[in-house]
Length: 423
Image (cartoon, rainbow, N blue to C red):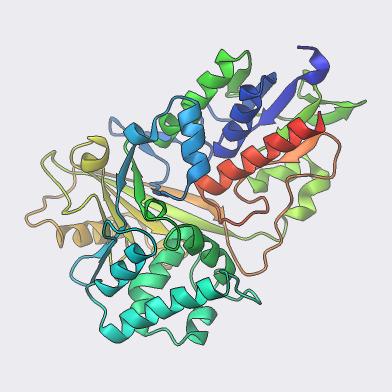
């Protein structure tokens, strides 16, 4: 293929690799540059105490159709790499909602009607809330915070605390007091209000690098492209009618799939498109216990605790005795010393596992800018940068979804299709 038709992707996270796979599948010559030696961006593998884990524990839902499509395309079978289970939302001793094997929309209605921990008034209020969204075609106009939306719908406080606020945090990584009700409505539309399979939980059984970015890189290489981990791009410049990526190129078109806070360094002209963004953290603590240690379920919520969600990686990944505790968004936990935070989470795990010994080892990973704060009416940049032959991809690019793996993948696919249409 002529040099003039070579394409570049900067960033090998889920957005960048999605773009690269789409381009390679269409027979395009694509070169991927990635600063880290580990592919995946902010959803990548990390090594802890001999275990391959993730820099942040993730879950997917059945509605993540594009992620699953591209996994299949690169030979990463979702049926093997993801543990599929009907929706189960549990705070032990407080709340349990699980979706029965019924066709949509009965599965959601019965999940709410049969939920433990809510009285009938609260259950009916939850159903009315979903029906109201559906009647309005899942539009919240004007966009307001989730907390204001719940106030407007007179949502009972216990239902808020055990259902809607945890769902908001899990989906948007933004507290209900700040989060966009419209974006939450988009997520509810495609998951709880979608097909029965769309509401299923998909729990990764391998680390996030092996789940997609690594097989995606092999897919690209097998089709004549190249992937360069450990190559931090220092300069992106326009030369005539093409682009240079450091000394490589010329490239006819470039997809920039870096985190938004790195965008200004590469393309100063686009800095204003993300300078108004705010950021939310995710903290993941990994507790290594003796191998027989198991949680009652692979995934459990913690009501009013330091941790929000606990994952049994022995049940999920065969990593016996390893428990991941996840805390999304800002909160009091960020003010605690690491030792105090970890000791507090251990006590929360001990309440669920009788006779739990002290952990053999604990390691905490804090991703300070894990996602953008998904606030109402947030202006997000379009995939078309406005510069010739330059496109943006990433979970922050304009779209229906918050900063999720599916949002990243969708943006990568969209950018790749724009590239192909422009050729």
